[in-house]
Image (cartoon, rainbow, N blue to C red; front, side, top):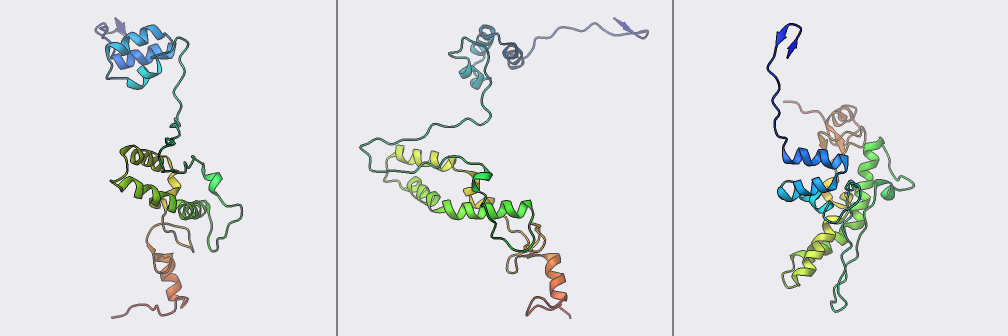
Length: 201
């Protein structure tokens, strides 16, 4: 073939990768060909293979955040755990904020995380005790682990980040004074921090 007087070699048809071909077939909704490709390459697309295992109709996309089944216990067991459903941030946010100082969206979010962590920490601690108790049945410990992993991210202590009460920033926050380095310097020079003065040597 030629383009603007220059000659280029003719394109050579190359076989497409199985996972790419299966993706094209799935987009067009041809279930039989998709099943054949997935059966010939079972290790490439396990999720799509499970989706098309018992499907005879058009393609239905997988949910973005699949909800795991609620764990349950047999009646002969004396262990009872409370299943904590998944919530969004709006479910946790207080109707009236009990905050003072500098307030922005990040400060409100961190305040909400602290409230949620305080509320659900006893439940998380109980689940951790059950998981680490080797005398309990393995099934009970596995269900406790499932419930702990399904709890909202705001219930975890790692979500909490110290922020400056005067500026709202999260970097270089002095824990004892709850303010950032720059605010600490300004307030110390103005004499607003009792017992703190500029070092001189």
